[in-house]
Amino acid sequence: MSVQLNDKKPIFEQIKDWLSDQILSENLKPDDRIPSTNEIVEFYKVNHLTVAKGVNQLADQGVIYKKRGVGMFVAPDAREKLMETRKQNFVEDYLKPMIVEAEKLGLAQTEIEALIDKEKKGSDRSG
Image (cartoon, rainbow, N blue to C red):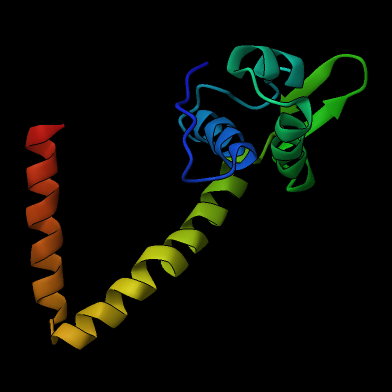
């Protein structure tokens, strides 16, 4: 388990995002047991209710499911659900604002694509 908690987002969201990232990267696969709320509480030294809120949101979304007395597990279609949600969020949080800003700057689609390509090449070398 490894996630750096910060002040930019509520802790329950950071824990939810961390678990989601584990599923998306396939570190946690369908029907794998996820760490219990108690394990997460102990590891990060955070409030039990905070952890439970993040975990319960994933359960409400159908990303994880509970087996009474056994634990929580990754749902069979969890990765697909998360991918769809993240894609929708990407459009709303990044793509639409980028398009609005590009229009203000008078950037053509080809210019935007060139900027993206340039940025990707730069990040390939540094990362």
